[in-house]
Amino acid sequence: MTRWDNLHERYFNYLATLSFDKAKELLEKDGNKMNNDFLQYFYMLIQYERSYHNFGFVVGPKGNLSSIRKDKSLLQCYSDLHMSLIEGQSNNKQNNTTQSITDDTKEIDYIQQLTIGLITFLSVRTNLMKLYEQISTAVKRNEHNVRLENYIDEITHISQIDMSSLNISALNPILRLLKHEIDCLLLLIQSYVFISDYQYMNSISTLHHMHCVLKEWNDNIENQQSTNHRFILSTTSPLNFFKSSTKPALYTFYSKFHELLVAKFTFYFTDILYEYGGLDAKTPMGKTNPEFTARIAQFYRRSNVEWITLILHTTKQQIYSSQIDQLADYHLIQPVTSFNDDKPYQIIFGYPNKPNSTDEIAQQIITKASINNEMLTSGEKPFYSGDTNQTKTYFLQNIDPRITLALVFASHRQERDTTIINFLNELLDLLRGSRLLLYFKNAAK
Image 1 (cartoon, rainbow, N blue to C red):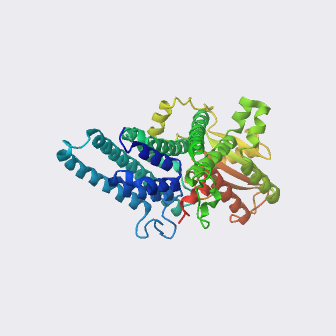
Image 2: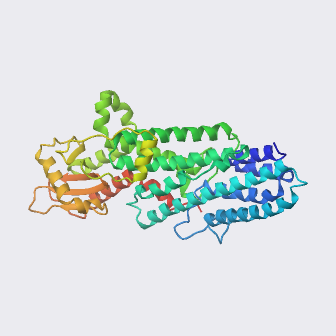
């Protein structure tokens, strides 16, 4: 152990548990006992990490930059620090060649290991920020139709980065922090894709895995974070929705998105869950998707809609990439739910009740979904069928590539009926997670 080990371990433990004030106090009190080459970087990291976990990695809707530097984004700040450490590492190698005779070799090796580890940490951080900013850009461009499956390859690449250089005692806390975040983002996107693709066993497995990672992350924060420390959001931040006395905004975002995905899972797989759990499944399921069912029931009462259904395209090709297949094998995810090939479409949800597949209304809905499949697949706008000569009016829109929402009215309704269009947009935003993703659009300043 070197003379700096203990101080560095305490410092990085404070960073990993988001105790930024304590990390700063440590530097102010004992900074003179640390290696001076790192002291300025340690002060910068406190600022950057505080901003990062407060969603500061996202450039605001008006192009606002980081609150750390008015002329730079947080990503640029991290990138500059990353390059500075790389340059410092190169200089240290040259100096160590001439000084190794007199200096303590163990301390020189430790400083080299610490530098390499920090370079890896900053490399992963900047890769994560680039991915978050891609999502942020997509939200700003089309906030109602952001598809997280588009980012599975990027997060898979980040999850496979070699982080073995962080396996030294001082850096172990931030290695755990990184792994928690990366695992959460990977599992969130996997779960999102599997649910969208109506893969029951894959969905339930990844949702459970994400729950375990979130619990471990939460326990790590709660067990080590001092009770007198508070993670504080700006009073003007739109992220006050996520405000918590002990949890970072980033963690709370993942927690809330996990809750949403569990609700969406139970909504899509109601029949299967009842088949496995019977009436006993009704109580826990009722607690997971109240917003979906409440909005549907409210719309049914006020709009005189005859049917609200979800149609599954059973034969549509799976939407996820080969990366997901590899990860599914790695996590030993179970085979997907099988379907009857004779039924290319199935109604998986109905309100006020589910029409039988042989009913005339069910056949009408399925026929319209089939004929207009290509237009619906884009998910950009609803399909409309209804005129004054018809007894019924149909609105269909894809929520996910294999799931179509259908509304059937027993009378003529206008194509741009505000009540109907607002309901469609609200339900789509809820099920796609667009509302939560909007926090990437309106990040803290």
